[in-house]
Amino acid sequence: MAALLDRLQPRAVAIFAALTLLIWTNRIWLAWTNDEDTVARKLVWSTPITLFVLAAIAVVVTLLRGRADTAGAVRLVRVFAAGTVVYWAIRIVAILAADHEVGFKVVHTVLAVASTVAAVAAWRAVDGRRGAPIGEPATA
Image 1 (cartoon, rainbow, N blue to C red):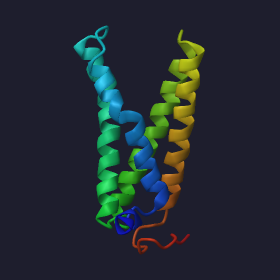
Image 2: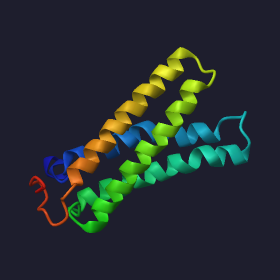
Image 3: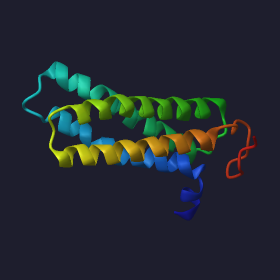
């Protein structure tokens, strides 16, 4: 088990993927069990969520295979991180401007901040990584 966990490097990327899975995996089910939304609305809500979950799974698989130093892996992490930051920048404004309860706004603000911080940390962890051996710091 320790050897498996050792493959999850860079750690910031692994944490970003895990946090994404924690936040979004149950949300797909929630979107599709909401009786108040139409099928079209369910598709709108679940499409970005599903893409985030698939990206997080792809990142975890890439890390477990020891391929985090490839150009494709770096690109995947960057697109995933950028998408996360853009999504939350748009979504949190909509949530805060809408007529939601304070608790809903607080929870989603915390999720937005945590996701954004994790995304930025993951981006920085792969910055300059292409060709760097797994487990060693990236060079500037």
